[in-house]
Image 1: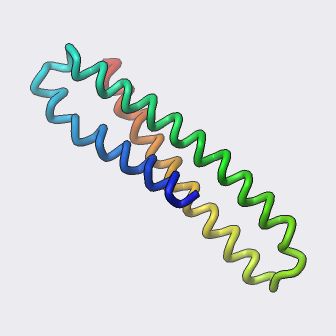
Image 2: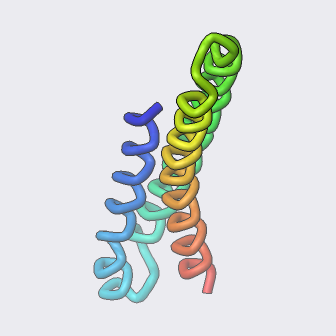
Length: 102
């Protein structure tokens, strides 16, 4: 799950690093198609992270009755934070897509 969220963030960073190339190409040509592909990849990676998050939450729910309540709450919080990382990477992709649309 953590690797998936980190891959999503790394893909968003790669797409952001292409921003200077987009500007120099005047937001046209092959560079736009390349960045659009990266944005689609970010969406796919974030969807995979969401699937993993649901699986982990389900697994934690199955064992939380045997845990100390504070530990269970902390783990749910950590799962949220990791999921937020992937969500924010997807937001970066969405904003880049808006930039391309203009």
